[in-house]
Length: 251
Length: 261
Image (tube, rainbow over all chains, first blue to last red; front, side, top):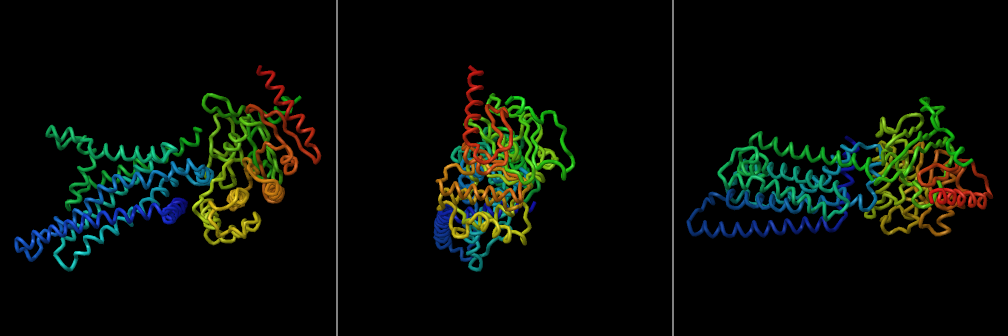
């Protein structure tokens, strides 16, 4: 496990010293702040016109949507951030350092995932400051916001594992990003057909990401949803470790 | 005669005693890549305190052999024994006894030299308290003091190769595996690299690959010549043998090429 932490700290440092990762972070927070302020402005106008001085509904109308937008942004952002984790190392011929050290494939996968995940947690924490800035000036439903935060934390964990797996499949970071994005989109839309046909409680619905993210972000914390995120994360980490092992037996 | 020499050591049983066992023994290791037999039943020993030079033309199977020895690529058949222990039975533990510099040094251009070496030391399992001393020792041994705070991406090829060697030595491995360590270096850098490799034999067993006969003669105690994945020559080398080695090298290539035709 300590090797995984060493790799995680190293990944964190690599992200920290690269300008593009800070630019992405700043860009995402800037975009979300713009959306947040826009919604806040609309909300205040409506409140003024209806005379709702208590600002009832601020959580649902302003605070929660800011976090909801981050979930959508992460679907595109995480493949970009994670694509270089392993593919970039293969391309730069530096992966042999990890493969030749006395570190297991599982530890490499977990370490890489932790490094990327730490970065995403920072992004989530900074984004959470936007809705929390309303605290004190209005009644916020902190329970719902906490569930929303939990949904984002689990969502990011699963997306990071998917991005890492895609990054282990190819030595081309662009292809890895495209593959991760494709997997994310499949998880988002896999049950669209079933829903259109009126089916909402089948296996195909269970496989879909929105089935689990939706209730969580609305404040309904159910173990089946938590298990889904943990399972997706664990399965893709295991696939990454398996892919790393196969790199030792293939050229 | 060449084939007879190459067959030396075949069918040997693994040596279990880690004291009497050679630092490295490959026992008939083979590897096929993309349907092509790149290494074929290769058996080699490297003793502690010995530098073995692996020579061969491009495509002879040198890098594939070294990757199998370093634990980066599994052989299709045969065993790699480190101090008598099978590398692939307890790979994580065994790899801690190996320092490996691949053909392209596995560097992180965005890190400073001492940051990178600290990471490598921790990766190889050195306790935090020993890391600073190990990094300082290898920076001094590899003459990296003047660049230790500079980004690796800004260093010359010679310094980058030395950083690559330093990372392979940090955890004081029994066996050091160097793939073309002098590749791309200018003559002065090459000379320094030879001095460094010669000095390594005091503490490690070393196996290195090279195209250059003069370099092999200058650094190595023994030379093994690979051709098309088969070991064709394995013998001690003494000073002033470059011309004889050159003839031998050419003869091996010519013999096999004409046989193939």
